Length: 366
Image (cartoon, helix red, strand yellow):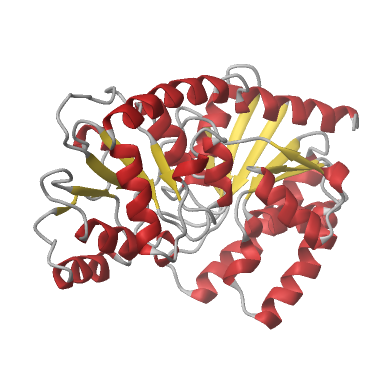
């Protein structure tokens, strides 16, 4: 089968990394190409899969992006007209729209979407209303819409996308830790976070909670990643008097090597559509503490850590969860649950599930 993937850019984000992983696996059995629209200064590796940029303009301005998306749409329409039997699978809203409208222009009807974000949560009332109507019309025309979590599926059902169009396929394990978690009998714990430093990640709550914890038991908070909120988080740590105990490591090729013994992964996000890093933390061997509103990440962790979930608006709630998991007998119990939950996640391989969706789309078997 000829499979063409389409994504906004080769940015170092979860969706793009998942796409590259899935495309790489499928390329051993199919003819696979990754098309992208915007240029990226430091693009991700496509893992040996052929890639081609559809946009032609350089830069990041609004008009440059609009121009690139129009060019991409027209170029795709021409390609689809010439090869109507080829499948196109796009990731994220903008690419999904380009995929749809290029198919409309070329009378092409063999396309699949992959949705992995709560798009409307980032929009005001007026633009949100318009995009909601647009998503309902466009996504209802796809052969299938692959949702990264049940939370995304429920969200699209509320928008009005028919249930028969929706299928849930989680992300693959993208960055498998090269080192296992280290454990010791000492009552010292390593609290850590990995991911983007954005407001939605709610890292000031984690820093505030950390400022109330004993340095004898929790010597450091390790924050691995980068983003627009780094300066604000650092200033907040200074304000709380823990700047010398909060370690910023930036993006790392091997992030788990920065984590000390008896690790505790904390994800205080207000919202998560999936949470790749939760899978990675489970693979690493760390207990995971997740906010109750990060629905996608909660789904990944299963019901094994329900009593550790916390209110992302309540400092006392996160402190209570950290102290609970830190009790010696409790910590060992949760560490065992980590292995069991990770084994469950490995039972369903996302690459094979995508392949199944593509074959069903080709046959019209729904």
